[in-house]
Image 1 (cartoon, rainbow, N blue to C red):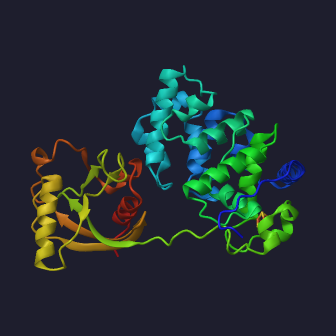
Image 2: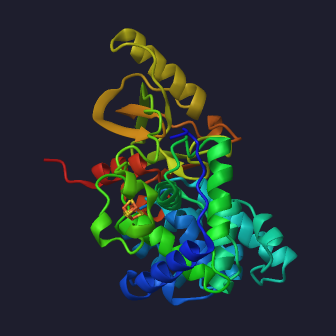
Length: 371
Ligand code: SF4
């Protein structure tokens, strides 16, 4: 078979595929909170939250978020910090900041009504072709295709596409296929059915072909190539890095937090002062800790003590976070850098702040009783 052979369905096969998928979705779809609404704003919130995040995780966040911001204007008027606090734990915080900016644009450019044309939706921050298509097909039954991780897999398998589905050629073919397969009506349900099939049956490993409603139309099943299609991604190369996070305490027990700047990872979130640690343990590391602390916070410290070690991953980085404790005997409020927000807080005050995931772990450790 040609590596990138591109299959087209006959009109009859297309009709059959549409009917079977729609019938299966009507009886088997999971009852998820965002499936009971046609409100574009609510669908948008769910779509953004579901990017890179499991359905089971999203449900509680979605319900909390909509309870606090039931309308796009409520989100537009909120303080960014509150939006981030509600998002805390979902990760990829850029999504939350972009949603906040998009809500403000909906308020200023569309009179507070979520736009209804593809171009207008696509122009909102953080919304690409997939999300715009999903919002408008699900909310308004617009005949717009979608392509995301699940549908890439399902469409690659249905058509036995053997090339790289993420290549330019692969994407072109799969978007075209997604568009061609769309029925004239019920496009929203059809798109959701494709995604549901990918999530529930046409899984990356060991797809449940026997239960699949479109198994007789699937070329990959016919060829027995479920393990080869879609083509595997290149394995991710991970990079190990070491960072330090400082628990800087004043004599009254308050600890210094720093708000991350717009150009930093987790922008807008509060965190313990943190920086890459390059020096090996010993006197060189102590010197680096003193110098970086002074640079980042304007505070002089003489000694640090290990507090905890946390291992975590961010994108391709595998981070070993050395949490160090230090006491600032003479806090220098005047020397705190003015281009950054700082706050001296008691550990009990930290739950109200939006913290990075590791920042939250450290904050919880600070509240644990000392054995
Ligand atoms: S038959 Fe199997 S491989 Fe083909 S779409 Fe269905 S679950 Fe996926």
